[in-house]
Image 1 (cartoon, helix red, strand yellow):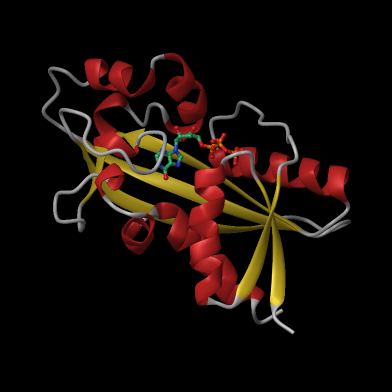
Image 2 (image 1 turned 180 degrees about the vertical axis):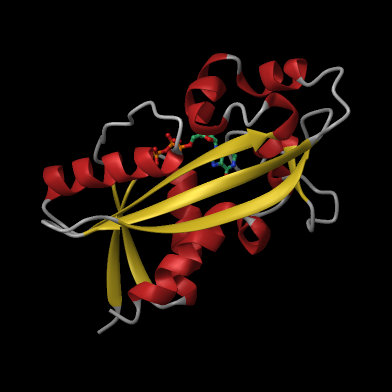
Length: 187
Ligand code: ITT
């Protein structure tokens, strides 16, 4: 029988991206819409670990969680671990305004996948994609900061101009999830 993973997230876009990656490894995935604590911390690893431990406590199952952030070089890594809050408050337009007179558009997304079994310590897997912040929003696909981020190897398209499969060829999340899946199928 194939393997199953339980992915705790409230974000259906993330879940769909994960479903695609896991299918490459013949791992079935279930979305657990459990509300986990999302601590504020300057390190996304700590955020992922705290929410993995919380999800395991609430569900008593082996759990996968993923935490990600957009790190903009000219803004010293902002919004980084605060990406979710920044997206909900100033949003994509607010970030574009902050970047208005800035020529250095370099940025990256960083994803941390944390896997945790009951009574064990979480294990972490990372993925990172380098890219640039464009000057105007482009595209309707995806979520969050997808309309303003173009990966270096993406032919100039923003993530929001790509379908899910194309985004998964480059994305931080797909990289981290593949690292996890390669390990998980050997367990
Ligand atoms: P969880 O329930 O899994 O925590 P979330 O939407 O709160 O889902 P995160 O805390 O991991 O997700 O993500 C922080 C924010 O970073 C998210 O709200 C987006 O604005 C942004 N983000 C993360 N990954 C992204 C991606 O692939 N594309 C665009 N924006 C992304």
